[in-house]
Image: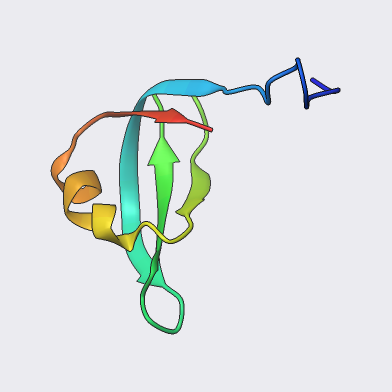
Length: 69
């Protein structure tokens, strides 16, 4: 997936239909959002949204998310 830079954009991957579980905030000021994601037929994976704790209510209220990384 390299090289990226001028003329070669950094790749974006999408994971569709994941369920957020075990949601928490971390960091000295609670600025990061940490959770596990689950997808039917796959194992659970931990995810961290750096500097995105403001999304906690949105993530907690959704049954299914599409995540771009």
